[in-house]
Image (cartoon, rainbow, N blue to C red; front, side, top):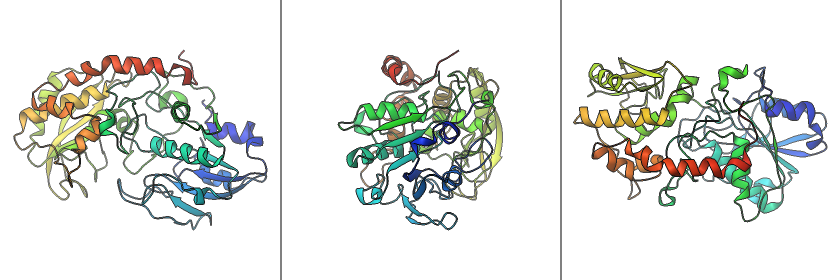
Length: 385
């Protein structure tokens, strides 16, 4: 069984924390393999003092909806101040860091560029570097594996909090590896220590590790969701529901105007490896098409090892555009970019879908993703067996 970085830190490397005033970037869904929250584990330390908490998107309680600003507060359970990094600010200020001797970061990631925890990590590295506070990243396996990389590298013109750096949609890295990659690019590097997860091999996905699945955000409902998310999240830039407000977000997609039987048939005719679609009906309890009966498809992973998640999203986008005249990309708000362009990191995907050639998005990006795989080699912490 794999040992998480936080377990290695607290069992073998406690001296890194001894006599220190500790800040922690995490939330109550980050646990050890026995389901004990990391916040509680550090709160109970007898040779250091946990003094401040910092919360990513969804907050330390992991209860806020996606995109909802979270206020700083006092945490009733721990009695500690919580500084929100998903509200007015995304980066800790020097005042927030006052009184800390070390910052510990333990943020679950699901292997996808749009998942904002990696950007919270990057901002914390920058902030701690600026005031000279050491950073310890307690690493975790990538739940969808560390071998496959898919998608494109974003154009800097489309950088945002759902895509801040030149990283593929499905990046195949751990948070510790991302930390090393980002830190090496800073003008002033943080004093960074990554505590590796022991026993993990790159080809392993979560079921291969012996570790439990713990939902790391309100809509991270299953491993299937994590596997499909690099592709299905692109529908957030359209007028279809991605299943928010159902039991199966990001594995269910539809709208009141969708004929799910027709869509499932056309999608399955593409014979994409590792996935099948079935027609279904659903009523979202919130978000897009709240309270409306939607037709659509539910995606079922039949072989996680051959699944091409971004390609699945592209084929779904293209077939929805071709089949349903009511299909639309969400228009820009307040003069900003189209949201699909922010997710894709380019406006080219939107134009390719309109031209009936969505899969060219992958072909155009293949060499850049291969170059990315070469670039990150020095930062990889785990071998592939």
